Length: 72
Image 1 (cartoon, one colour):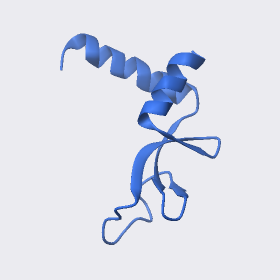
Image 2 (cartoon, rainbow, N blue to C red; image 1 turned 90 degrees about the vertical axis):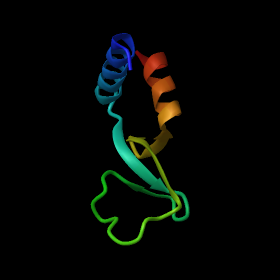
Image 3 (cartoon, helix red, strand yellow; image 1 turned 90 degrees about the horizontal axis):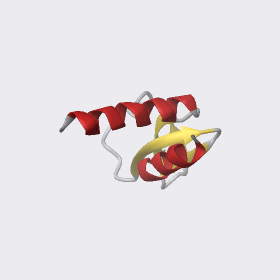
Image 4 (tube, helix red, strand yellow; image 1 turned 60 degrees about the vertical axis):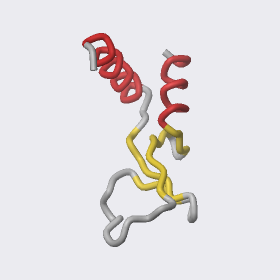
């Protein structure tokens, strides 16, 4: 990974933090948002999608990145 890409990733991550996005998982079978891996003990679930949560809404990584770019 080159330095420009690393800097962009750090800047984007900071923008997501500043806008209130938190890393989360969505279980789309139950529509439950988990803010961390706590409480997910047991066998892996095939219905989990990684992304971000903000104000009770789930965003995929791509949607959160697009929002961060547009809302800055």
